[in-house]
Length: 305
Image (cartoon, rainbow, N blue to C red; front, side, top):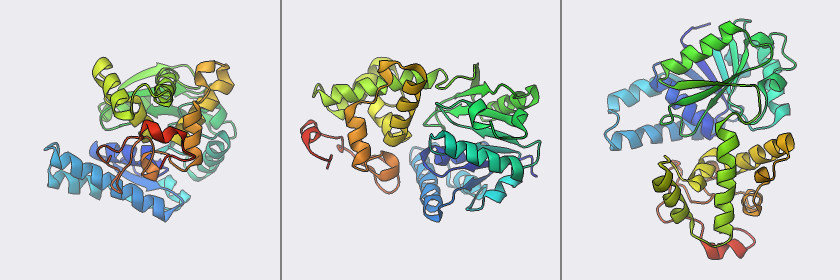
């Protein structure tokens, strides 16, 4: 087991961003996903994101080559045993995450740290079937991971101090500030940001302003890196709905009941960046197409064309 290699499990948007950030920090990283297509799409988008940094003079071509050389991919779950740290970024479903942790608990050495990026599911619940729950922990990275200097860390009821300390050191190595939160679904950021996204969608539904204007208002008015609708696309609109429903189940707080338009877009297959269409349209490189925001007059249609 290499003490330099980190494994990221899941090649969707968060997995892509996390792989890029880990490799940029100087670590070797293995991206694992059961789908070859998802792996190729994920690595293509990592490369496109690095090309965008080069275009902004934030990176050199030599640095890009070095970063990409640190990234490997695999469809084999057994390759998770090659990392000292495994971070899962799968769909926000307890059964899926719990099953993966149960497999990893057998495959990986007892000292390997198993981390979940889950935003709304307790790490204690995720690791319930593990024989070594002391090495499990929640590390919630926020999108865009390369730019947001924060990681929320949550210990499970059986997580030991060594695991917590190692998670903090890893986050600091990535130049992130960490906060420690209780083992409670939603952490701090998700509990606060989801109602904002939900309200932004309702403002759009009511025809108060178009997508671009809503996002511009929140970015400039509150100093956000991304507007709420753009953020929903990056997270994945289907994932936002999962988050909202999970937190509503936990809290019975009405602010977490998903707006109708969110569900409508998911039913139409418009899930954000990962499907090239959400509140905005995106190219195959994952970059947003100018002037592509969902128009108010489209909201009465059966699907948002």
